[in-house]
Image (cartoon, rainbow, N blue to C red; front, top):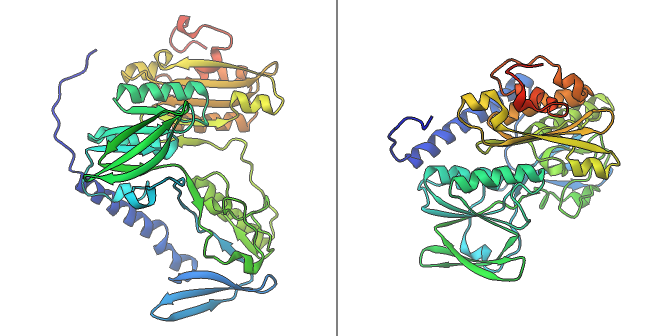
Length: 408
């Protein structure tokens, strides 16, 4: 089926960004600021720094126009998040570059864009701009895109990017940058030491984020940080000062909003209710919102092997998934990692439309300690992406390409 002919008009980029801003503003109010009164919170606007001593910490809040306020509390929670980080590069600070935040504040779509960083944020932003009509080049220092995922996942998303005419340079680093003729001129160095020059209208740096701790004066109150600036916490989210806690990106753990929310709740329970709770990250899912999406939960083959677990794994391509066939989109692959001998499910990794929903179900299987046999015999509605888990489990004992639809 070749598809149907259609016609489109260029996207009004300014209108697109305005719509995004309106939605974010609405959600910020509805889900955060407007809830303060319901819970009895007081919101103090200003810039806060710790003062006092380790035994008697206080917060000094500078509120502008010379005003300030001192807040003395029994317990404190640091939840200042993280900010985009750029690697030290000759000329980069002067040339002017975008981050994942400022890229979403543009009102003019750039004709060309260089994205430095081929992990989650870089991949999402690269594909977004490419699909809006920007000519995009991605530079990744490691040897493959999505370098912390399974190699099969990297190959699948690299094929997607190739099909969408997104140029990818792996094993390459940014050597220097300068502004020339209204464009960004960058020098890229490859693993063999060779260099090449690239030009673009905009330069986006997506090389990770660093915790927002500079300026908090944590040393004064005995709060330790690691070499990246993250607050060092124990399993209860308590810092080296027993009255100060930290949660979310600033605490150096997995940088996901749902992790920050869970850690914030954990810290509050432990600080105020002495609950002594911890979190189990074994089945923590992650999603990169490309199209098709990248998603994973549990161990990779390499992680399981490093932990001393013998593994076996199987791959299922989209061509073997009925829902993907009906959608006329068989791009992607699913990899299931299991413990050899017992068949215990250890990890599931996917590139597929709806991969995030698929991985959530896989997380439940890992949490429950399910085996391949159990997963292969679960109920799975026909023509859903959830059926992919059942099919992948079946590949350990059968050739699913030879099975009739819904065969159990």
